[in-house]
Image 1 (tube, rainbow, N blue to C red):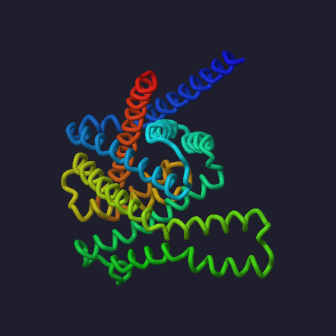
Image 2: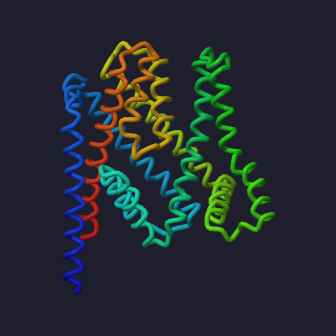
Image 3: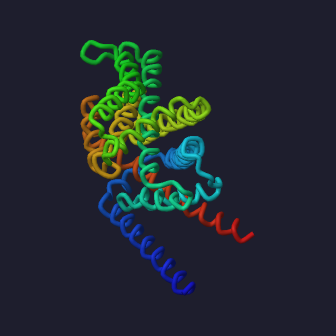
Length: 317
């Protein structure tokens, strides 16, 4: 029985890896322009972006692990978590597969699927709230004159950040009154929504977690900004810093709202229109996003391969 189980497990892994490799091949085969960009781009910059992208993946894994340990109270070693996270990044070449793999692996550590989904929504909520606040600070300091509909852009960012961070509290008060008044607690949707709101409030009141979260978030934000600036400069050197910053904000906001897995094509088109509004070619925006996808994708694969090799050596000893 054990031999059959091991055989089936290895066969399943082989099939999954084969499917991932097929998706990777298809991606590169259908996006030949990426290779032309790489040939014409600054090679040193590409290596630097790959290195920074690997640092980003590690930072995101630390951010998630912090939430898992401080909020969900799961017990998992750093080495095991990094194996799960890096492998899931590689498996993201198949839509939804990476996140499903991560959820299944974490279930072994007593994290049920409801709490898994809630934790990721909570991280997204905190991340977006923090993102708008830091954009408010940056635009106040460096781009004070930028306005949108005659309103200073930094005021809009601060307002959005304040709205997002306070939303669970104001909505929660109304929601709790409604479910108590109409006795809706036992209904599946309302009970899950109540748990999600509680998770939001508990996490935001956990001072130690918030301190750790903000430190990691600031590091992620600065590295992501640096990646975009270097990447844009390696493709087209005449784009000014202010425009590079606007493109960075645009990529972050588009990626934050997932309409389809990883917003494939939607993000490219969105950045294309944004770059066009900045008086550059539409194709340039599409290529910026494609090039960024390729480098992050390559970094994920490279990191997963290296870590799996290290993990196997580590477990043998």
